[in-house]
Length: 560
Image 1: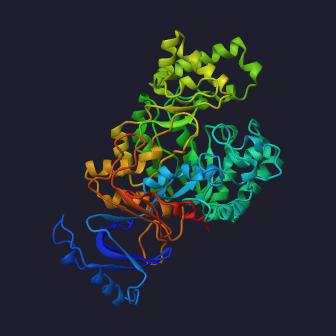
Image 2: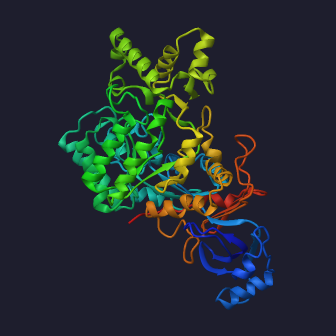
Image 3: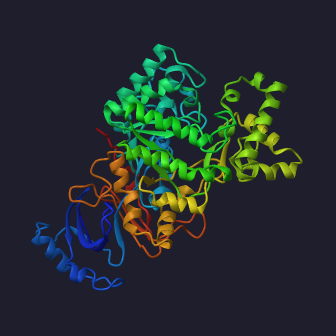
């Protein structure tokens, strides 16, 4: 079946100026792009010449299109933008790709945003890339995710085979360093033995050979938090060897944290110094994951943080970052706990001396940071405290007449450190605007559908929000869509996607550039995203809703 998109204002994902054209799709590929003449295409800024179906089919016939027009479905895109399907540069949906119980609910809100592809396996955690005979697989996903034993494919190649045309969106995976390290030595192991390290590195290298896009580090989470610089250099060197990307959730994203001594240089900048060293030492292609500035006292670090990334690129290294438009984000409740505390057993944590030391550190850190319990909302407080979901720590403490730190630590323990939080004061609108336009930025959601508790609303509207921000700031739509499509595909080496080009896969979005925005309510579909096609199949229509064809529309994408 062929589909002809007529009279489209094509924003092709390259960043080049838009043009009017007819685009012919045959099954899953774009087979012809026929531009309109400049004189007819841009007679008026807000008036589009609508060409009849007969004339458009005749033009395609002249250029080698369908010989008689039969079997061609025509879609009139007059007055709207035809763009490549958006690629979410930082997703965690690999943990749901093989779910058997209605997996589409984990992807539907993303498709409604125009997202047709995802880069998964971020922050050190991937749903593949581990020996299946490991003794530690019950801890896969750390504190964030869970994988049913029936869905475990340790081989990256076998996992990609399993999700191909068995998932709603196109999927490119990274290998989680944390996943491979956990499988080799467990969640709590600090220093690896030579044998454990070698097993981990062999697992990662095998995954790169089987088509993974790169390796991700999660240096704020167990077990990545325990990795030495020597270990990380060996991991980064693998990425350099195979010319794949290294994405990094750094040790700190704030001016003060539990990762370093409290005095001295900003902790965010110290974390970036580590990545600067790692990049220069190994020559790896670095992606700084979700560049944010947590806590109001960290906002002053924006200039120096960007300078570190800019200097690396100036010196010839491939370096970038991804960002979202929200001023808050989802994390685990332990993200503000020090490494040494997380590694203690239950009895040791109850020690009066340990508790006193911890409370003093938290009090000092939050004061220096400009971030406190009034900024922490519970997305999921665990089975014992469903009444806390959606409420701030400070709000609960005030109502119950308790200290916020006591409420916080109590929820940590009662949830077995599995509670999730929405952390505020990540950045402000001024910072978002600056990062949006930075030459090294691409866009993402860093969101996933949660079956319990409160959702992080980036799952509903991150990309339409970025498009609205761009319109309000009079940023060219070509630049915004480039960062959602072609630039992301180039950064992760995703073949034949991210651009509207002949021979490329037909991942397409029809949108109204004048109205695209978030829905009126958080869970409402975005406004202005009118149709979404994945590999030539219509997955979403704003009038028809989500279509059943979407469930198996996605392809597994191998790199290399």
